[in-house]
Image (cartoon, rainbow, N blue to C red):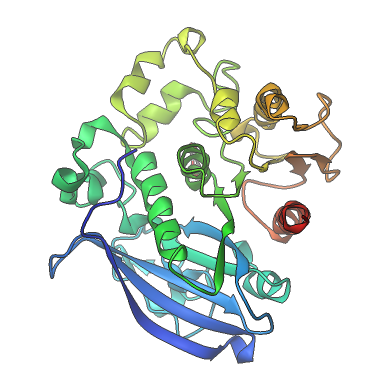
Length: 353
Ligand code: GCU
């Protein structure tokens, strides 16, 4: 994981203290990765709760379809980047007005704000467009010199994870944010990137893996649901080339995903699955959370505190949390409510002397 480029800078493009009917302050910030006029950049959207004074905790995570997709709020700048046509309101790989709020069910902005949390997000395609040739126009190419890594030394998942750390760099400068209480979250492929970012960057106080599946929380050596071979075939750009050596031999992997999760210790970690999402291997995600536990114990912490798969919608765990809910591959209000409660519990504990 390369460090931040020396010339990185932030520009607040817009601030509205009366957003969402007065509930929030909305800030939109461009992170320019170099000093150049035409520097590669990412657009950050931040909502801060107005009813709380002082620094607030935050949830941070990348989105799939541009910042305008997370809420119908007309003040959100529309992404002008390449976006997959399979996303709602996207035509000829560009966002249209119909994409406003198209992902709102995945981002319960008001719920977070009312609970005193800020929300910060950016479009993952700002780092690298998610297709096999995306690296050519993404930061793996445009920042190759600054970051000192050849494009084939890392993958798109790495580039997205790197972007999460750059959001953290910004949050450290934002007075209204308690940067010691930033929870990093991600769904699916962005969840794979979130656990990788969380493992590399200890500034994230808490990490949430939402149905991150193969290459994320799920144990690869179980070889259940999506396999390494399928992952690398469908998405050859996600991981570094060496991963392909294990396509036919997952049992030869010297490591597995529970060890990735364990790198997040002793920070709180929440893993969740959906019953109908067998592709992501709920059992493998659960076992990974179980087997990260011994490293938490080295720090005197209890991880999950159980090796028994819980019933549907019965969250378990201590410093590692886990739930499995009904339904399909997605993130919904039920998931967020558990993540929020978990973050509140751990951040409150931290606040005590
Ligand atoms: C595909 C892919 C998964 C990934 C998912 C997603 O299903 O096979 O590995 O997690 O897309 O990102 O939604």
